[in-house]
Length: 328
Image (tube, rainbow, N blue to C red; front, side, top):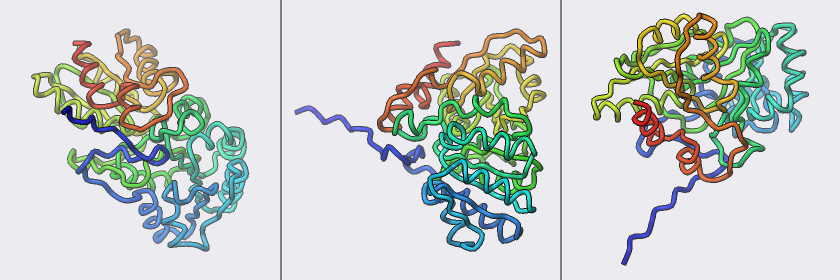
């Protein structure tokens, strides 16, 4: 009698991408915002009827008088956030990335970015972090927003990045957009003597054979892949770039100066994200060289369980290690 195959299943909407047994922190964004609000009375929170699914409910419950439920009206939410910033408050406005970027772009651009107001937009379910299909998979949010003047863009790797980024974003003049990892978020970067610094990349591990330049949750995958490849005597460096804009061109130029294989890793479309940021950085500096992009394809993605989708579209650790081995 054959052994039945174990099916990979997750809740399609808010599935965790944490590995079994991995250390996690619960709602790091919500917890960090509460800590910040205790120190700063000017911090307020807004939600477009998604507080529970963006961890804004933690702030709502702690500071109900400083929380504004705007309903399913993302344009109104960002317009209201702009008004709150105009009178000296520091709003954090949370919704799904697809709604903040596709649906409310004009309000973010003209109400917030053009006057350079201190509004912090927090987008949940970035890239392929939900199995609900194209209506909720924000695979092109970085491409949409990279061209917006005055806007700072952050793509955190884990709970450490998020907890440290929140106060940094509040202290930054002008608008910000952060891709949110919500729920039980893995804790990884505390093992690498890491401190989040806005606009700066961090070399998490050195390596002579391969340079992985990664952002967001793919930094976690890069570190895991590097450990696996080490067993095959392949020495992999990992450069984490949590800030997409402004981009740390100096770090990229420094680390790509040798002859190592350069691989970019991102939870985003291959169009308009990290791979193109690295490529343009090198091209503008007169550095012509090949880059191997690990990214989502330029297409609308399928619905399904996250582990299956990450394997299918090349974001899993198995897929990353196989890709690197094939390129060497």
